[in-house]
Length: 213
Image 1 (cartoon, rainbow, N blue to C red):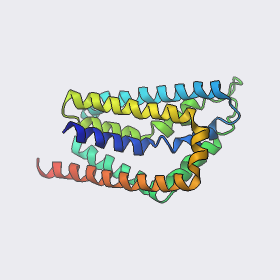
Image 2 (image 1 turned 180 degrees about the horizontal axis):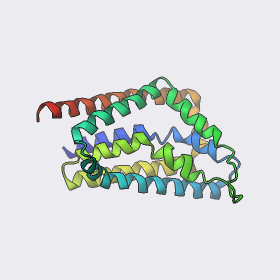
Image 3 (image 1 turned 135 degrees about the vertical axis):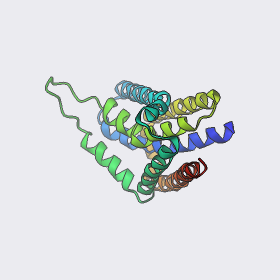
Image 4 (image 1 turned 180 degrees about the vertical axis):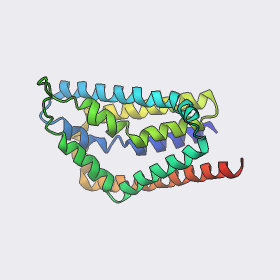
């Protein structure tokens, strides 16, 4: 059913990408920058992430075929990976890991050409937006798309969430002040529980497909 597929896709990608949780990360890697500079970084980061995720939406299933990996096998492995991400979210390990990555790059070092490191590519686009979890999620979801309409819906959902990332980057200062640490903590835990349930469903569907062959 199209509606059920799109809801599942939205929930999975929203939790794995975590647009709201990226706000403090964006601020951490863009210290001292004013509006236009931050807007330029936000545009580049979301554009690069969109290109990567779209590439895996269209090329993920053919890649599995080339490697000889069945869709049920990827459902199980992808579900287990998402469960690990959910576990980290529930117990706070993922937020700490992301914060550590952002803190290390808060003061980008100049390269041998004297140019500052472009944080729009790393760590924003990769791996904070288009990371292992979100890439696995889009491959998994695209492999489950039974019609071209569902595939188009997945693309639309992906672009919508990336659009949310862009808006949240622009409003990062305001969002961080309004939410506060406690609200962010509670929201991360709740989303982690949701992702855990979705990942278990992916594993169950994959295992069922093995037994019904």
